[in-house]
Amino acid sequence: MHRQRPLMMLACVLAVSLAITGCSMKKAPGPKSIVLAAIDKISSANSYEFSKTIQFNELSTNIVLSNQMEESKWIFSFLNKSQVHISGIYQKSPHRIEMTIEFITGDEIPKSILMPVLVTEDKTYIQIADLPDLNIPPETIGKYVEIDRSKSPLNKAHKDTEDGMQRRSLAQFNEEPFFKKTFKNANMSSPDNDMQQAYTFSVTEDNLDQLIKVFVKEVVPVMLDLISDKTKVGYILGDKSIDDLEKRLREVQQRDIQSWLDGVRKSFNLNNLQITSTIDKDGFLRSEESIANLAYLNGNDFFKLDMIYSERYSKMNEPAQFRMEEPANIIHKNELDALLQNFKHEIEPKQYDQHWIH
Image 1 (cartoon, helix red, strand yellow):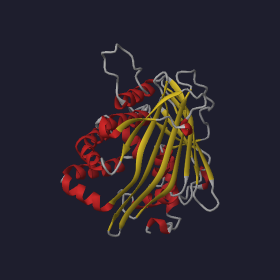
Image 2 (tube, one colour):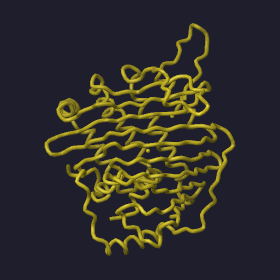
Image 3 (cartoon, one colour):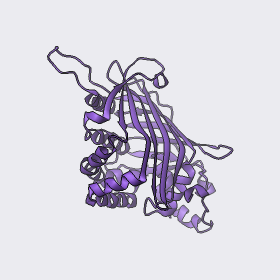
Image 4 (cartoon, helix red, strand yellow):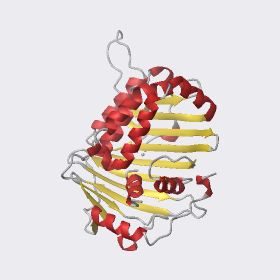
């Protein structure tokens, strides 16, 4: 097993409105167009600071989600009941992202694990952390793995793919019954408290059938198009994961939608699934909060997810105040690969917790 891939997947571990102007004869934009404009505006910002939190109240399954079985087991075991905090600074040109990823494990005695990440025009640096059960060679802990992207068009790959996937996916859904204007949520206020409006994209039992139809007919082709350029997404997910995802998406396309809907109704329990976006007076996205509480039960197979994701943006288009230096204590990715290959044979496979199978 390539033990570095979960590290990369985790490290690369997760959009502002148009001003409503014009004469009285012009129809005001609805929630959907405002949210999409918000995503466009934050994507075009020259710089901003961001913070993100993911809380996994439950993440468990016994279904093989990829062709890397051991990796899937490790990721689910590690993230179940954990928290992930990400804070950083983004600058469009010259391209630079500094961020710190903090994992707080869901153990009885929680453990905090920090992973600084630096992305420049042509390189990515990720500090190697002592992640539980990955058996990272001790001599590499604390060093930065260097990924040289200078010879491939990978600059901004993560951000472009993330923004493009969200924007193009949401654009496929009709305003009704998915988008609506909501009241301002005090819990989502930014430090400068200049929020104007909040908009929610929500999925309920009433529109679940429509969501599945739109997903199969419209969103899946968008996803296939986005992952078709492996020079970009291969850097984020790895070629094998991309091949596996493409295979599963094409299987979804070939299914009979009505029979799939019937199966979903029998096996799928949707408690809550929504994204609330808060937009300031200048049309900038300032915060998003996503809630997902769902379960899939089919015979002995199950998948359970209870998650809250929140993100905040601030200091849009202000001069970026970077703090990190390019690290000197580095190890090249090919060197790390060789070390991991040699080291893994000395370690017995991990027996994962019961929540993976029950």
